Image (cartoon, rainbow, N blue to C red; front, side, top):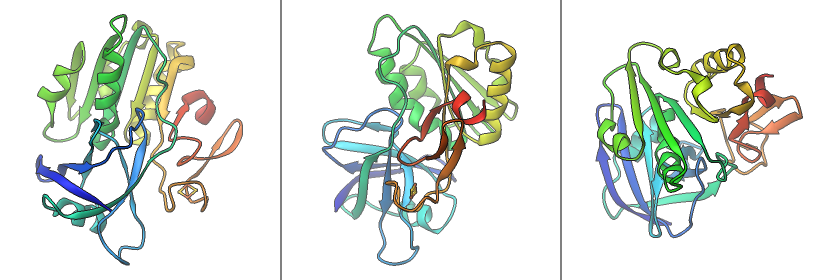
Length: 235
Ligand code: FES
């Protein structure tokens, strides 16, 4: 059991939950969270937004009963966190990197951008798409070279994929597929990584709920992913 350090409401839908934790997560990994006994049955898979030696933070969107309960936690409350889990974004890449996120899919891009920027040879551009009011713009601006925000349109329209050595994306599947199509057209699909958001139950490879088809057979998003090369999933 861990303790909540802080829980900050960002807007009507989003909150930033910071929890005590000494395990170091890698970029693009997630935890299973729960702060209830038996109902709702399942823990909630939530991506790591940021972490340090003593804490892990999650940017969470309220989408149902579980996330509603998490949104009401206060400093000092108990929370069960299991993780870090899964295989995240590639860590050893360098060059020009684009991170493209939509909705709550922007969450794992924060720590990722920060870590890629630790390598002075990297250029890191972050593209964020929102259907409503943008959130955390100032925070993202500080940790990348260029921040591009699209409100109400398609963030995929704003990127020239040929400018980048690597493109990493997380968000609604439709957004990621449009980006994949664009990359195919611009012959950059070989450098596109996608973070899949399939429904999960166990989070560690035991239940098969999160299975997705790839051209290397069926894979478990929670254990083999959530990050895959786009060509592996859609190619
Ligand atoms: Fe159970 Fe992935 S959530 S195998």
